Length: 518
Image (cartoon, rainbow, N blue to C red; front, side):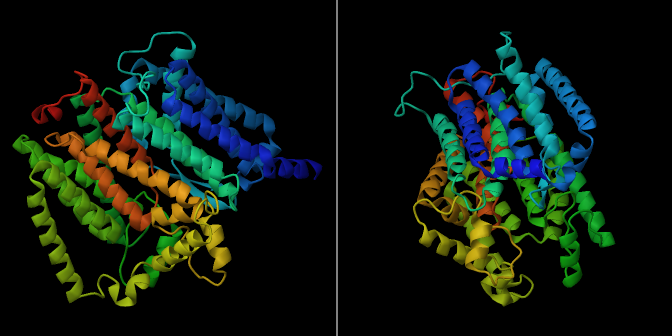
């Protein structure tokens, strides 16, 4: 009893809040420090402090009962896990570029873990890849050994001032600024536990992933390997979705099973816990593959890409994710604008939008629009208006990071919604972080878009990355999960690495469109 009281006092006191601020400061150093050794030490500190903060959050949760009852076995299990991590790090250190296909392979897979009384679907395989890749990078630096060529994230130039910084540098700086602000604004949050989980589960590991991908030399062969792996995963997940639809069974997410039982339609989610997340994955994969059809590629390759796109499109329809369908259209429009003249792309976009409007007008019930905007969006319209009301109450600094759900329910105690956020990222940020966070978010989005789009015309890979990122931003306006999605950091890491190579004239990065996917 006494130990529980002491633990509760320690976890609810200032130490966890100070720990969150420290860990986001370490992330900022990883992204910005010009000295490799400083970055390595910061990365090591983030890797060590993050699980400590996580344990402080879940120490009294049911999944740690075994640890309390059998501490010796828990210690042995922890040592074995560390040993496995070290072995993986050693293997990655021998061939650093394998971090790219390993990350692509791990991106979709989530494991349900209870934390703070709720169940979170966490990217445990990706965490393992990020931790092993980070150790593989920082180990030789701290031990004074040479790193393989092309395996170092580029350091910001120490002599470059704020005015001389390139767009690439600004993306790094704005990422660091946003993560740092999120950690600082967690201090006064009404739901600090949620903010802590966001930092530990998302911002810290994904920022390390970004830095690892940012330092890879993205050769045509590596790009091709990752694209083939992504297409294979998307096809496999689609086949699982087809089986779900044919058998009317859901593999994961009991809530979706109930929802399907209550409606005449049936929604699939494959290995994902949410049809919209599955739809987002399919839409982004389709955008990255569609570029093969717009450039001069071997006929066999284009036929294969076309076949894959047909499979993915069929499964995307079964997700009934309208936000993902919209994101797909946005991404394809960006690719077309970067491939041809923007005027032609605009004409195509107008035709597609017009046909869509006619279809909706002909049968609004099919699209759920006969219930009004709020009904068609499953109550999200009310969440957006409620979020704007929260922003109006505290427009400068907001209610604190991660506080949207707590504050929305406190201000609307009779609401029956089960949604966990406004599902519109700018609104969520405005309510939680006020103008301070909103400005940092907008600056990051603008800088990232300009960095990815600039000089990408005629380059199929960079065009595809820019289009996928634009589509993802659109999707976050309807579903949320911007920097909480590892795909965001992955696209940024690859895109910024290629933009940086083009600026510096890296010979490993092809400039001619015909050579990019050869």
